[in-house]
Image (cartoon, rainbow, N blue to C red; front, top):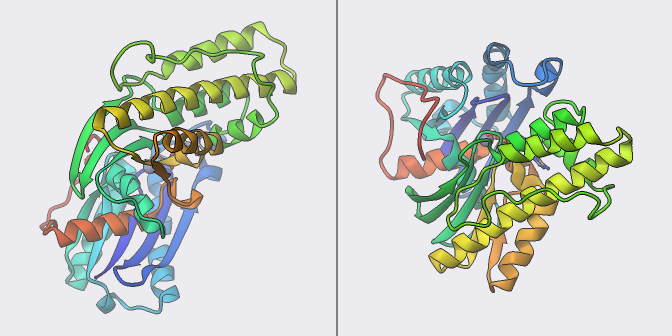
Length: 331
Ligand code: KG4
Ligand code: ZN
């Protein structure tokens, strides 16, 4: 089975072809960061317009690179939600129309299921069951995964997502959008122990998260301190350490609660080196292992959508001629 995957849920146009035997045959990613940088965040209307411009040319490119024609495909998968409605509609309408024109099944994919299955694109594939920590710009969730489509939500953020907290704190530090990776780089020069941020909701039972307080804590700290590069790096260090510690505490709790040893992390924030190192240690102590996608597949991409679409199609899911974007959609 060979699937074309289309991802347009936010500010990245990701297109890929996944083949059951050969794996990823080709993939392209176009990031709109430059389009939104001046505005300090994603402007939904500009995102939709840019997806309109990029999606078809990138589909042509991946087909050409893989040396394939539409007849060589078995289905077209597209992200149907959650995400920005206008951006989603671009991928949904192009994906659905191409599938109709090419006489192929169309497969709507849940964006977070794409992230959750992204580690399956690597050589060292986690076996079911496992616990997954999904950490992106829009979501922070702990999920028990017993198989494809067998997902039990264990906990989630009651306010900001981890990536959102990274981006908002980065903005307070005067960094450009999306500041998460830049803040993380800055933290490398930070002095340990100069500041200590709280570890929200770790002092009570449960697996939910809350990150909006950290941003406020950062704002108050920034207001009180000088604005030297070293102070900024020290604040970035303390903020990142608090997020990573909080995520690690809840991951350990989730693994113990589920009596599992395998942990998967995915979504943009799973590219964070400090988080990977910390979770490596946590799982090693439990005699288990952590699995994560290569950095380019941590953030949004078409390969994870093609892969999730293939799994969905194998289990008999495909869409009729109507299509809809689902901006809010539980996993
Ligand atoms: O999964 P993703 O590409 O898009 C969503 O579905 O939201 O995640 C993007 C988020 C952004 O908030 C970005 O700042 C964050 O992931 N991110 C990082 C790092 N790389 C990306 N946050 C912390 N450290 C990183 N290295
Ligand atoms: Zn995402």
